[in-house]
Length: 371
Image (tube, rainbow, N blue to C red):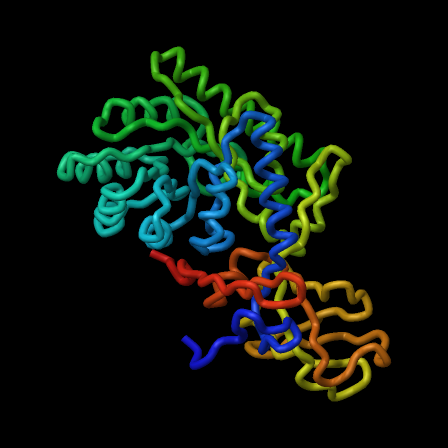
């Protein structure tokens, strides 16, 4: 923790110390409302993905606007949200270590918990703890529908694993998890549509095979910000796990949209200062790799096409300057993160702005929750 904070409630945006992670509340709230109203009309549940924000305040707003709960990636991350009062949490990941299994069931004393499996050994570990504690949790079989990351193959292996879960009370077979992560950033609408058509077909085949075996499949969950409309329209998915829609990063903005697609606004920014200007066409910012992630490329400079981030080191971002007359030492600039999730994980708090003033400061309480 730093010895002081970048801002206080009531400060003007121009007095925020930099680098700072900024949330435009008006854009954020419009994004929340757009997703909620769209899914409500379609009759599809939103299980908002909290790995994007790691912030209980945001999770509470999403649930107040209709989300049935949240999902996250780590048991330690889930613990932060359960402690904050969130009552329905799905960990969209597999666990195998005894410590994590025990912690998951401890959380199930306070909230409805869910977990994914793609191997019988994971089921055995969960079942042993369930019988020891007498607690129930939701167990989803993750099916590989195209991401080629985790997930059982969409054939008889998926049916066999689902049957094992269904016969392993007090575990509850909750359905199928069918998330096509790599489809989220396919740039062309036709590419994304085709990828989800394939994923939906595979999900349907597994569901139909389960039904043929007398196994009820309560739910098919998945989808993300880049493709959720495709999953909604598939007739197969009944729950989506979008997360980045609340912020929208530079990488997502490079997806081409059809006229029927939803337009979410950039709401998450990094405020930074020109700390050095050694030559006319090169300036240096006080934000570098410890202030933004570069796994999806460099941040963009908001509304400044004359400036381009070309290099980053630990504490410095190097700008290429095409028009030296438009920038000076001490200028404040606003960056759009390349990838919101790992960028958020670098900060202790979101500085929430409305009408050019700090309205709130929300702790990023699950920052660093890696276990």
